[in-house]
Image (cartoon, rainbow over all chains, first blue to last red):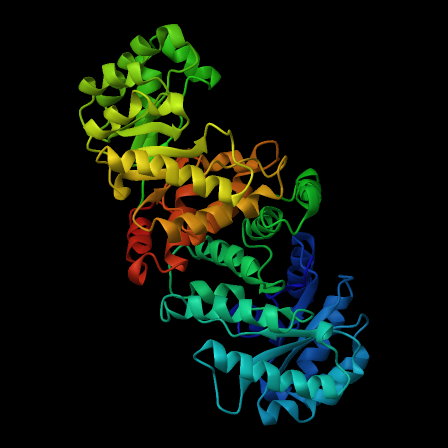
Length: 264
Length: 264
């Protein structure tokens, strides 16, 4: 099984932003527990909406989540100063989310990633901006991978994020995205791949159906990790079912076990 | 949109077999209407479990279904004598289900298919039996296609069925099946492809998840038609969502319309 980052504890979500401001422990802990119960392997913590308070908000989030959930965290910050300060507070080796090939996001972040024994999300973008095509994503991936490898971060700790855009505004980009996933899988077989899954359905009605169909195609193309809301109805069931159909789950044992545990 | 054959009115299903024996008009008509409401494009009628009574049972089924539903039927019989007798009773040009490359299923059936203006399901098997590999399916497809073309049935009326087997008993066969779909799509671009979708999940728990993930992958590979139970929760929503994600539904218009009509 790959990494499933539970995305719900994110300050850009109105109620979560409010809960962070209010230091609403119960609310945050409920979100953490629900996501763990639903099958997340990592709990994302993001306090980026208030840059002035990001550090203290992150420290509070980390303590609050760790008090009730035994999973590793996904430290969701673009600010190396914040990541540096919070790392000692984290109990289990976290996922660092994220670095990219942009000079200003390499500086300061690479040494932190190297010092952490865990995985890192590497956005496939560089100083030339958000790539429109497959080649741009591969080029940006190669750039950031070189930097990481040189710092001692091997491919199996790199989780490329090929930057998914909404189907509604970029219909042609879905095929480009899936092709990029497939090429990254071939080019860097030991590396992992992740995306913010629900981006696909932004702006469409009944998003859940779109999310599931996309997830199945992404898994088929070679994506093995997802940032998602594991409490979204049926999404984890779809994950296990797609892995079974794609023969990533020998004899469907994982699927059958999930069913026995009443999770499907 | 491709053909969606509603599969529920099949005598091998215990309650339906009973309803046919009892001449239970209400039961059969309810099944027909529910499937039409759920989005079937064709209603399958199968009375094959009692070969001695197949003809009279089929005639009754056809009359019973046509009295309440305005969709074309899928005449599900391997017996040319039955198909010949019932064809004049059918109001809308039906799908004939099915023919194959086996000598005993070509004889008698080809002329009926040619005389019918509609599509025909062509099983990709011949006298050498059920193919285990991609090549066997392609060879059988080419054989039956030649026979049909010579009889005046063009590719766009041929609906290949590459014979789906259960994931639980043939895990490796899923990849073989999808590869066959992809090759058939390239080799015979004007022809259609269909399968009995729920075969995939036979023997597994929570079959619905498996069915949906498989359907998405089959659509991606080039399958455009399905035999399924359109009343299965979420299955038609998955069909429309997968088509949207695969850019088979320009600007997601069909998906958005389905949503507005409360069908997703």
